[in-house]
Every structure is written in structure tokens, then in C-alpha cells.
Length: 104
Image (tube, rainbow, N blue to C red; front, side, top):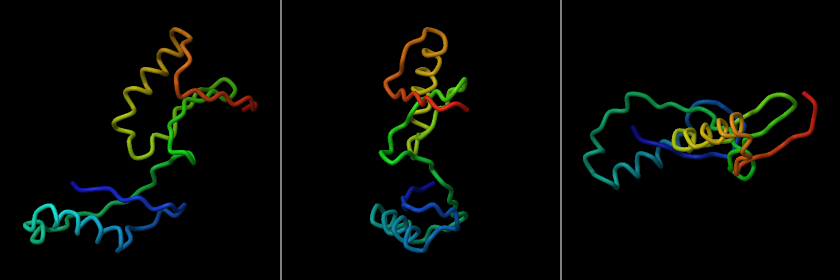
């Protein structure tokens, strides 16, 4: 598996040639044997983020939202889950806290 690229767009369409070429060129530069590799799948999807690309734990009304993990979600998810548990169980305000005072 090889990835990922980043395009600032709200579109969730198919992969763009430029992005695939950049990834393939990087793989080939890493080792020329990648030049003979088969492409079995090219997948794309959105990675939601806030404008500053920082995650947030937010309370809006009576709900808590954990969002904005961007491209590091699989790395950050355990830490944010722990922060959310600490908030719920011990009332500890997390470092990435944002309280929205709108009613839901």
C-alpha cells in the first residue's frame, strides 16, 4: 500500500492523474523495481479537517464530537479516545477542547 496525496478541494471524485503520478514517481525513486508493479486498486476519499488541520473535541449542546483527525486519524485516534474518556469519567478538559455554546 502506498499513499497519500493531499488536494484542497471539496470534491470527492475519482483519483486525479497528477496525484497517482506523484505517488508512482516516489515509489519508483525509492526502488526501480516498482516500475514493474501492478496497480490493483486506486482509492480516494475525503479526510475531513478543520482549517488549521488540528483535531478537536467539542461539546455542542449535550453531545461530544471528536473530529478533525485528518490524515493522521489512525495515529491520533487512541490519544483522542483517551482524552474523551478522561473528560467523561473525570471531567478533565482535553488539550484539544473547543466548547461551542450553540444549542443543538
